[in-house]
Length: 254
Image 1 (cartoon, rainbow, N blue to C red):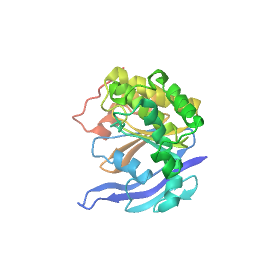
Image 2: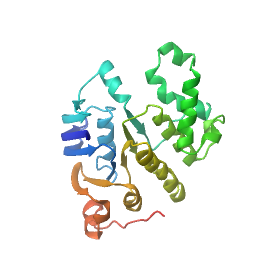
Image 3: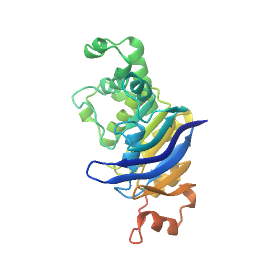
Image 4: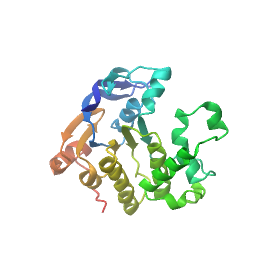
């Protein structure tokens, strides 16, 4: 089943930057798609268009067979409940507990007064603990978020996104600020979510060693255009130079 279909997507910012230039591709349900490319290639813009954090200029975005390119209001909120998002920066409420931060992922589905006064049923707490268990950090439920390491905070952010029960999980450079060992650890939880929960994942990454390890398919962007689409294991040295430039050298994360 095709979960996401992007057709001829363009994004031109007010300053004239043409960040996406006719990008088209499909994502099948259950895929782990990774998008690669240099900084400024359009990776983050693409994910933010899909999640409707920014408005595309032209083209179409279909999710579950429905055109969501320019929907607004309640229709947009309904769609965004099904699309989780994990950012490079963890965006946690530092002084709140880990469990409270995870529950934030469900607030969009709750009544306003219930969310303001934190009137949550026991089932919400149980679900939040289950999400923490999925990312292997349930023992930290009651500690403050700012007491955690960077890798642990990112796992809390992933658990928060799981509270939406998303059909599609987007991750924008989720390991860019982490050390190599922690990067692999965090990526293993994305893999677990993809394989065990069946959640479709679309993730922006820099390091090809991680791409080859986790992606089922890869798309490479260069100056806003797709220059490669296919098996990550088939990106040889020539393709690497095409994507990243002749002066680039591959750095491996183990």
